[in-house]
Image 1 (cartoon, rainbow, N blue to C red):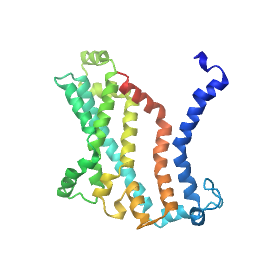
Image 2: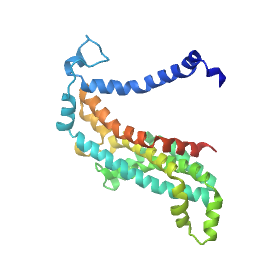
Image 3: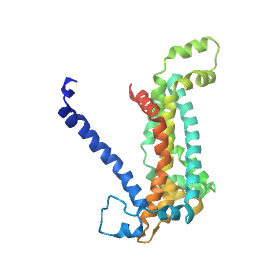
Length: 280
């Protein structure tokens, strides 16, 4: 580490790459923000500074919130994401605990098969799922998304929790079994409290995937009042070859804020959970 003691070397080796990385990462959000506040005449003008707003306006937010169904899309996205995340975490905890802690024959193969199921592209899965949704009479309802999202949330969340459960010492469970505790008591009172970072990490991952999902929401939902934010913004704010860029960017900006807030509050747990999952 003595190589980084001088300031010029720190600038070249550390701060310059970090600066480039942060710029590339945050520039799309900056562009969304300035575009959502630009009036239409600035958006269509070739003059002036394209990276700044001269006369900011809230007209695009007014159109988005009061002249479209965006509040309903936001509510639908929140409901679907929260319920799907809860269901997926419940199933993933049970699956990961049974695979890692019960030590039955073929548990490793079962864990591998669950993770391989995550690698199946949603563009292939939505074809058989569409037939099931139609047969159950769930087309064009939020339940169609709530019941199909766990098909890609559970496999990765299970794999993530398997890695974290593996890091918990078996001796804790053995002592609890000697004292007469059941498996459910061990899971609820010992394993889950020690696995909070892993649970938060899996929950953030599942919530983010549910919030941003597009293919299933586009296939299974047709009514405007039932659409989610990713589908509603794209389908309702694009009229033929006319793109309402201000409202589109405002919708994208508002739609990205909940996930950004969740990450900012739980980033330490998220990193800890990912580290616990892959360290072995």
